[in-house]
Length: 336
Image (cartoon, rainbow, N blue to C red; front, side, top):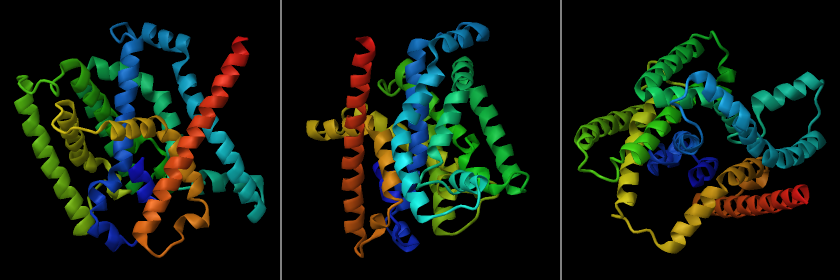
């Protein structure tokens, strides 16, 4: 979330390359999507038995209304900020027709990262399928997803589908989500991260090392040498090939933290946990904040980044607390 806020501060490309943005800041959306796959898989493995046949599995999910509950959790905090944005938008800008107004909202968006909410809703809608089949065979599901993503990317490139829709389609995020599922399987089931003496560890370590080198090479060629990829050249900074780099990085970070090679001070751990809990609300707040001209005012880049980080994190966290307070009050009233 911190990387998302920093990424949306307008800075010269030269500054981004000098500060190494492509290796960490630009990885914010891939990390978000891998985390999404990890968390959804971790949550649903506890609730649903994928050993059931497909029909019974889907029935169980419909009975629990999990998709609707998840969509509701993202739509409800989104609507108040969206209403405020519409109020300011309609005050300063007029539209010839209602269709022009809808077109503006759909294709122009209402702030940096506005595609994430439509993408998240799409994830929730197809997630039951991903969860069921990935638990049956993560390898086959990942291969199918990668093939589907590649075909869709080619269709975008040859203009079968308009490029303007590209940012809202979920297809470009699917491999990242599946890697999040794989990460969760390793982390909780086979436990190879906790026990490096596990027989599969050496083989996987070698594969991850090769993957990291290939991904690193891709980023350097793509971002620093200006060599355009053959297929995945839309949104190149966070396109599918960057998965080769960021997935091993996250796995190695998890190993370091879980083996307690890196001691995290308690106060820092508390901050990380709380920011993580409020990350969606912080995302919504920063999306609204970056619609305001004041967000990009300032000559000194470092001061501007620090100011925006403080405003967005504090503002988003307060929005999270207020939302929880209102939600708890409504629940008590409903119970009474």
